[in-house]
Length: 77
Image 1 (cartoon, rainbow, N blue to C red):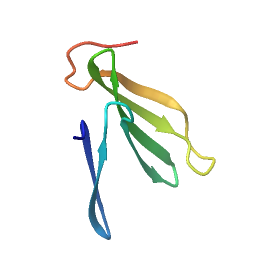
Image 2: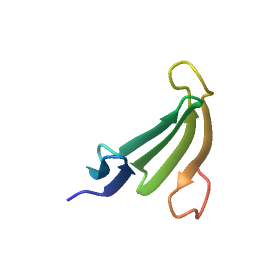
Image 3: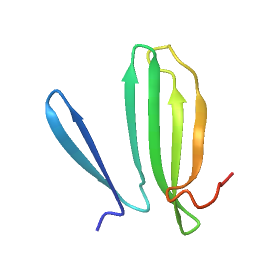
Image 4: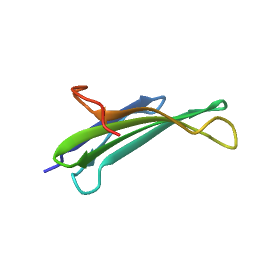
């Protein structure tokens, strides 16, 4: 059974993907100005979200905006 579930919607409708504790789940949304990447991982018994800005086609910055528990209970390194 999947541990993570993701959806994306666009001009061609909606699609979904599953992620497991071992694989996690990652999605990237991009424009001509750069990209935003969201990763979900299971680390040390907790579900962790990593939200980052990423370069796309040579444009943008690489910066972590948030890394911590999905429930927002405490920050993780």
